[in-house]
Length: 151
Image (tube, rainbow, N blue to C red; front, side):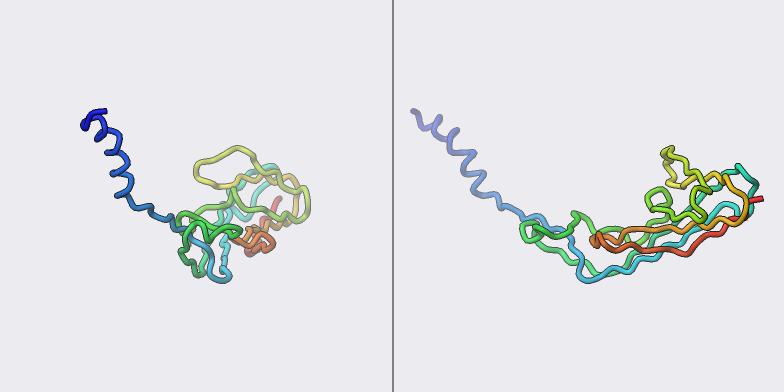
């Protein structure tokens, strides 16, 4: 082999040897999170069969710390810190409906993340948003109930 052909073989190895391997950092919770749900409805008084728009803001506060990815095994982690404020999550929360079966939720995906609900029973209907706590799978957080009067 010539000197020139040997340089082509060793040049990539020299380049790789000079590269530092950067360890990826991820975010893990550093204590419990405080979650607040703030629901609103387009109208609190409707007729039977009418549809309302449900909205929910979610605020999450708490501490996060960055650790190397290999140390995060078995923990709940994120590449980026989760948002502290989400202006619209109505389509990603669970809704407790009282009385049962008094509302039909639209399953259509909406880019604005509003949840559509059609009232199919007369009287007062209560809708309560419920959200899981980030990285705490057994903890659910309830927001205040919305009351809708259906005539």
